[in-house]
Image (cartoon, rainbow, N blue to C red):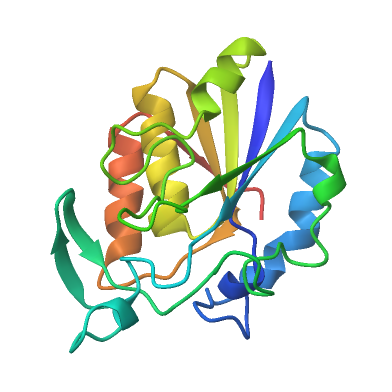
Length: 200
């Protein structure tokens, strides 16, 4: 079986949002169209408590997009975004959420960020997505969403590491491209055996 994994298509990652990814809204309708062809659809949702440790506002003297060291390694400090229950955390209003078989919420542990759909940023604490996919006999994954160089990249790398057959539809993703992060993500995904596809 094959699943479409739709990563973090939320208001705060779209134009006008707290952590807007350029062109983030452009991929919504094509993703909806792709959902109609998928055997299974999983949506992920960034879901942070107020005062999350990945927010620059939680670190006096630090600004958004600066790096800091966390117990689990380097962490980009972000603007406050996708706060639980906020309008920014909601899915883009045009996204066909009714098509989803499962919604995975991640990043709700205040002490650790969670880019990947599979693991928190310690790379050990699971979200439960792997078990769900295995129980349904799903072996092939196509990933789309926001942002290419962070949550999509981490999700694709973890999926490949777990033995799934993974492709990323690059035309249905958009990137932050912070300090060369997009090129680094492309190289990492290719190196891990992830197929980078584009029909756009």
